[in-house]
Image 1: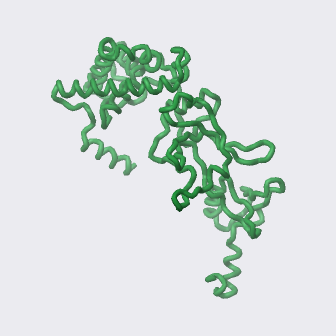
Image 2: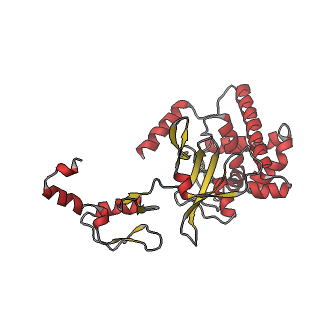
Image 3: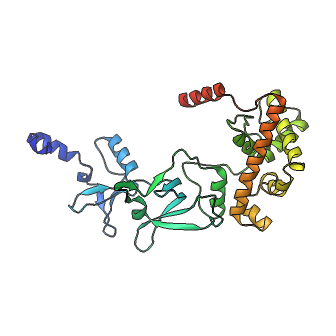
Length: 315
């Protein structure tokens, strides 16, 4: 060991820097876990800050009597099981009797009809590795590229769970919030954007007509684009998309969540989710046909979203 070949004075200095040698890190007599006291006086405040951040499910005793860090932190968001099944982690709670950490999650597969139930996984089991084809892999892998959508957070919030601390949402509709029109990269995103903002865009339109000033949008061009999309959506629902009119009214005109819309329509939530996705696809096809007929492209051009990505990085 390199540490054994160091001079005695270096060994002493190294021992003094060990976090567990500080007097304010104590061991809980019940759980055996180490805990940190914020009143401790560390010679290096930054080290104390990082230690407090890392001790999430904190430090446990190793078989040799030292301390070992927990395997990983668990965040609210999407994870994927090693066999490909996606889940949505909502919260990490503790068993009141044993103090054991429990992961609360739900199935995130939109293909399932019966995905409104919540499930519990022991934290130790959630973090462990499994052997797949002779290779050790994490049982659950966090899907960092999959953003937590407001609809999912709204559903778990209505079921009594708090919203993710890292992803705050405002549940009060605000027509004065800045609205960016036609910033989608695909027609599916374009269709989804029109549907999800339909209720608020309609309120903006009425306010602009009443007050004779732009509200939530910046200029006349954006206002005309918003009116054009609203009119096209209404006309499509009266004709080609008439089969989806009831779903659209519940979800996007009245602003009901998928759960409440399913209850109102006396359908399973999974059925409503699949039908909503079918609505997006059908509407996206109509939007594409409209652009082809008009000889224009109402999607965000590649140069535009490349520039937006650069601006996001600079921020």
